[in-house]
Image 1 (cartoon, helix red, strand yellow):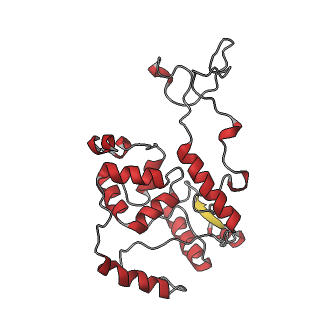
Image 2: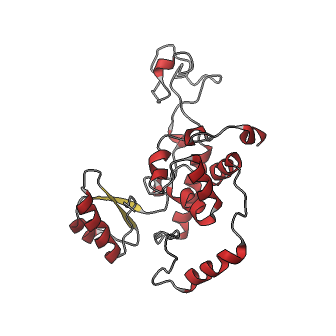
Image 3: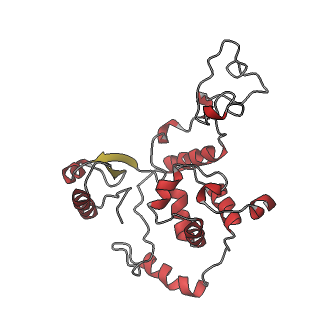
Length: 236
């Protein structure tokens, strides 16, 4: 823990356990700098949202980031937050929140077994080691992307104990929740509003294709709100 406090965090990439794919997901949540992330982690609801939305980020990673950024556990007085929480709990049909406040996103209807397996998958993802290709440390040009060792005399291919671990089926998550969004939704790719008619809002959420223009994207989001469907990559 002492090493985390001494570490200088100038960019998000300086955080421990940080991966490149987190950048786009954090930007979608209006987080583009360590200062933005520190402010978000100080809010319990936003910190929980980061943990739920970003695949691979769990309680251990959140705790490490808080320690490195110096986030205090109680940033907002309890007296100010209590009325807002009570109001949201009473009104369930239509969310009533202050303008500019964080809105809790729609959650799927999951059975107890699926929830347990999602939590297990998240824990396994946090504990899973980083698989690096053979001799990545010796030749910088190889980079850190995984490549299966194929050499006839490769010690890594033969699983010699002092060589790094190799990707294998034992590291995979539970089959039942494999491919699900971290929130538990099954992702459905859509390119127009008509495709929303076949989506089950209880178990499925939609992701708008990257080739969809802004005007059509707004129409998709408006129709999704009418049908109670969650859009994973909203514009705002």
